[in-house]
Amino acid sequence: MADLIELKVPDIGDFDEVEIIEVLVSVGDSVTKNQDIITLESDKAAMEIPSSFAGVIKEVKVAVGEKVKKGSVIAMLEASDSSQPAPKVETKQEVKSVPAPAPAVEVDVASEPELVEIIPFAPDNKSAVKQAHASPSVRQFARELGVTLSSVSGSGEKGRITKQDVQNFVKQKVNAPAVSANTGSGIPPVPVINFEKFGEVETSELSRIKKISGKHLHACWLNIPHVTQFDDADITELEEFRKANKVMAAKQGVNLTPLVFIMKAVVASLKMYPELNSSLSEDKESLIIKKYYNIGVAVDTPNGLMVPVIKDVDKKGFLEIAGELGEISARARDGALTAKDLQGGTFSISSLGGIGGSFFTPIVNAPEVAILGVGRHKMQPVWNGKEFEPRLILPLSVSYDHRVVDGAMGARFTTALNNMLSDIRKVLL
Image (cartoon, rainbow, N blue to C red; front, side, top):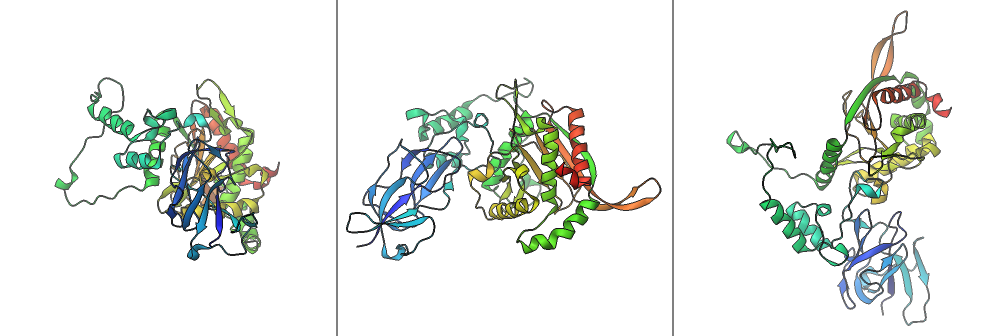
């Protein structure tokens, strides 16, 4: 008789308990490896939990509406011969004897759950996101119709969105009267043009990440009055210091890039001007100043831009940050980020230095109030009072929410950051 396996909830991030919104299997069902067996939904995302083994479900331990956490048993599985777990298991796999003919093996369902609605720019407060309760099938139906579920009102139990709710929402939009551009309400639409009459065209669908991040960036641009401050930082000494320690860092398995030093300089500057490490309250009447420093770093991936977050940058050294930055960037490019990796940011950095260009206007990643854009450094002649000398110059572009940061504070912050980068030793003061 094949071993019975306890399928358990894996690490689901910073959540004590998450509600089950759908149980996808029943007793007697045959499941394949990586087949989804339950769906969880938190205030941040919906996630489907897959099975790590193929086999037959012998007992279901959970029901819709119950709340589970890491380690909760979902179901008992009789594994097929081809998917039997090895007698010796890793840290997350523990053999446990039970008073039954077949031994039970505790196995995490998966090292990370598959996120259904993971967003590249994850807000760090609940007020920025409206929770949408819907099953995976309804979510798929909404995606096919191009409907954002957070805009749909649910008529099901506990406000759950049904397929009929999505259909009714689409009908309302189709039948709604067009908004005149002369009324002052709404944004005039861009004219629809048949480009084929001018020449050959090709239609390429946007990636899912670009679709999601595009909506977020559009909302940020429309809701935040942006101002961008530009400056040049002299990083000649910083680059010499980095190169002098690059080999030492490589021996420890990390790549000591300029971005590591920029992150530490940003945190030191944020401590001087904490308003840039804040968020506006939901009623826009007060400022929530954060005492932690989590820096989001834009990563260029094959599917679009992702912004994973490095936590507690103020408490970590240069080498530790370098190692964590390399690891999380690699997972971003492999499409292996989780919701936890994208949450809790207080300030973002978008570095285009590896590609080229100088100044640009980065869009503030709401609910944050500021973002740093970094261009490509280059050697330039600088007058020292007596003669021109070659200095390595780094272009900086700081965009900020003008409701929170006025021009004077924005200039002071940018100048402070410039000074930190010009003499990285000041970060230690």
